Every structure is written in C-alpha cells, then in structure tokens.
Length: 435
Image (cartoon, rainbow, N blue to C red):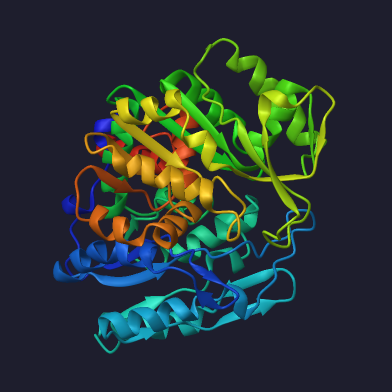
C-alpha cells in the first residue's frame, strides 16, 4: 500500500457538492456533553468545506447502544446527538436539521427516503446550513457487518457527492468509517491529517522515549503494550493493568483483578522478560478497603517489595507519591526526550495524587515532546493541571490526540496509517487512480 496516497480534503473539488463528513463527536454521556474538545477540533475541517462551496452532512457515533450478545440496539436520549447539535447551533450560529427516521424496536433505525430527499434539497437550496444525522450506532448495519451494512452504506452514499473522514478517534472498521469509502470519492479531513502527522513522530521518536499506559482491562491493551515494549525505552503502567501485572509477576492477589486479566498479564510478563529493565515499576501502592471514596482508616500505603508471595490485598487504587520521589524515576523523567501518556494512575476522582504527580513530572521536563492520548487522559489533565493545560495547548512541545484508543490501535498495527478507516481512504485513492 502506497501511504503517500492518503487523499486529502485540500485536493477535493467541493464546489456545490454535498459532503458527508464522519466526525468523532462521541462526547455525550447521559444526555450531557462531557467535553467539547473533540467537537471543536473538527471545526477547521467544517470551515474548509463551507468556504470552498461544500454543503455539510455530519455523522458521528456516540456511546455503545448495541448489545454485543443479542445485537439489540437501545435508542434513548442518553446517546442522542441532540446536545451536540445545540452546541454547534450556539457556537457557529448555524441552521442545523436532524432528519427523522423509521425506528424498529431493538433493531435500530432506517433511512426515511422521502424525508431525506426533501431535507437534502433544502440543504442544496441554502434553506438550511447543515444536516446532522442521528447516532450512527443507532443504524441497522453500522456494526453488524452483514447485508444491512451494505444497505446502510448505499443509503448514506446516496445522500452525498463526497465523503470526508475526520474521525480520528473512530478507529473501528464500521460502515460509516470504511465501507462507505467504496461508494464515494473519499478524503481525509484536516484533523485526521494532523493526528496522523503527530502519530508518525511516535514511530520515529526522540530518545529516550517514555510510554505511560493505564487501563481497566488487560485484554484490550496487551497487543499495543507488546508493540510498545519494542518502541519505547521505558514503559510505565497504571490502573488495573498495572495491578494485574503485579499479581502475575509477584504472585500476589489484588481485589478486582479477574482471572482473564491475570491470564493476559502472565503473557505480558513473559514477553517483558525479553526487554530487561524496560518496565519501570512504581513500588509504593495505595490499598483501599472500599471503592466508595478515600475514607480515613480504610486506605494505606504498601511497599511492593515488602509483600510476600501469596499476599492478598484489597483494591489497589493509586500509586503513592513516594514512588515518584525515587531517584531512578526522577532521572528517567528528567532525561526523556519524548513522552506518550495514555494513563490515569488512580481511581478517580478520589485517588488522584499519582496522576497529578505524573502530570507535574512530565511538565517539569521542558525539552521533551509530550504527547497525550485522548478521552479520560485529557479530561483528568484539565481537572488536575488546568493552568498547565492552558499553556500547553499553545506550545509546540505538547500534543493532545483526540482519541487515545486510536493511537494504541495504530501502535498495535505498527504504523501511523495502521487504522482500517485510514487504510480504506488510501485504497479508495488507489482505486480512483487506476481508473
């Protein structure tokens, strides 16, 4: 695959064209926008399209309304894109329409042809400024990959002349991110291009390169962690995956670690033995008797190497400040020339000291390139180091990805172009070039 063929929106003819844009506005939880960062990051692409004469139709997924076991799709206001539309209406003063759809109980929604014909006609005539489709994961065929997917792709493609993918965080190969590229001229948006540019820096890092990764499930992280072992000079773990790693390596028991997590952790420990001293362990651990909060008398600090095999602990919910004061840890942070951080070290919001200390130590290194995965990492960075964040967004030594999972997926695939939606864009360009 020729990666130089990544098609760019700058090269598209958009004059009087209907442009279907896949964005990653997955920011609504329980009916409320939790952070506008992902929405704001796509606005340059939207302006680019409008200034060059294009007419906008947007679509995004939000939440996980589909039951993976039964396939049933739950349609509620909790996952609706209505709050996103209201935000854009207020921010950009646009007339935005949300079309109506047929709802089939537990089986998703389908296109209402006559409604779409009228609303697209209104868009072409300038009577409205934008169409925003409902949550793509409400559609029959978005995720299930059968005949419904082909039907959905054709229905979506019939609405537009051009497709643009600006949804860096939506790395899963779904109908609205991959299959549709086989039906329309397809291009990468400005945000997608910027994210890929910075991804390439991770694959050609300034060294020493420090990776810091946390997560709630080991099985979803083991593949990118295996790749990171080869890519970084030092790797630090946090959260449940760190607890599982400690259980596997030191034969201790920590409440909340499942047998499945332990199985994957054992594999990772064995793999990490091929890279001695690459994993930097943080030995001072905060154990809590409860998940209900940081309650006096119900939490305590342990030194890892004082724990004997067979020790049983309650919930380990943070890395204590003493870990960050160790000389070899401080020297590692001081020497680093690049950081990739996709981690919240403690069980937020009550156990935050480890995460806060980590952010402070990264910020103290003025020479290193500092890259942060999206989602929880960015939200907690804002919450715990807001003044640093305000300065960081204006500085070239910081970069905040809009999707941490997308970065890990690219690392797993071993390429800045590794995500299947990005490969689909390149394949579309190659196909058009051969015509």
